[in-house]
Image 1 (cartoon, helix red, strand yellow):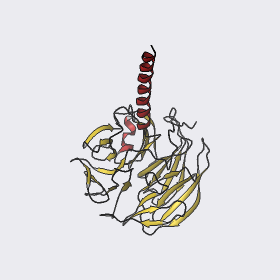
Image 2: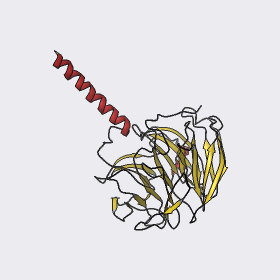
Image 3: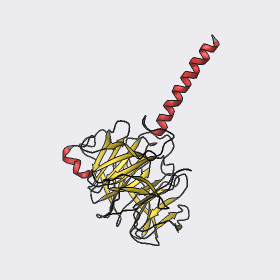
Image 4: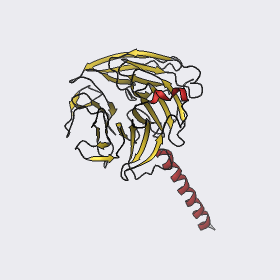
Length: 318
C-alpha cells in the first residue's frame, strides 16, 4: 500500500516539475535544453522564434494575423526590436512604422499595442507595467499608461525629448531607466505614477563614439552592451565607465546579445542596407542563416535579471 502511494506521489511531483519548467521557459514548444533566437524579420514584417541548433523557425507573429486591427497593421512595418519580458513568456515588440506591442508567446495574443511613431527602435516594461519606447528620427522617448483591457479606446502618453533615441533599458537595482542617443548616455528617474507616467532626467555621460544604437543587458552581469556607429562597448552602471570590446567586426553593429556558458555572443551586422539573412557571433561564426530573411536584430530568448525580478508576472496599470 505504501509503495502505491509513493508511486502516486512520485508521478504527481514529476507532473508538477514539468509544469514548473514550462512556466519558467515560457511555452510547451520551448524545450529547456535548446537555444532559441528572437528575430525581427523585415522581409514579411514579422517576429520569429528560431531553434538555433536545428536552424528552423518554430514560431511567428504577424500583426495582421494576431490581433492588430487592419487599420493599424502598417504601424508594424519594418520590425526593429524584440525583447523577452515577464519571465520569457511575453515579447515586447517595436517597429519602424511606429508600433509597439506586448505579445503572449503561448497563443500569440497581442495583449497591448499602441502607436509611438517617429521610427520606433526600442521599448521597455517599467516596474508597474507601463511601457516606454524610443523613437530615433523624432528624437523622443514616450511613456504609455499600459492598460491591456482598454487600450483601443484611449490611453495616456507622454513624450520626453532625447536626440536620436534608439534604446531603453530599465535597471531594477538602481531604479533608473538607461537610454543612449547620439554621443551621450542618459539616466532617467521614473515617477511611478501609474495613470500619468513620466521620466525625469537624472544625468548624462559623454560617450567615446557617436550615433549610439543598441543598449542591452549583458547576460548574468551588472553590465550593459552598447553599440555605436563605429564600435561595441560595455558599460559599468555603477561607475558609468565605458570600455571598448574587441570582436571580428565592430562597425555598424545593430545589436549584441549574450547568454550563459555554451551561448555565443551575437553581434548583428547588416549585409545589405540595414539587414542580413544570417546571424553571426563576435568571432564572425554563423549561428543561424535562412535565405530570404531580412534580419534587423536578433536576441537570445533568455530571462533578463538586470531589468526584471525572477518569476515576475504581467502587471496591468489602470
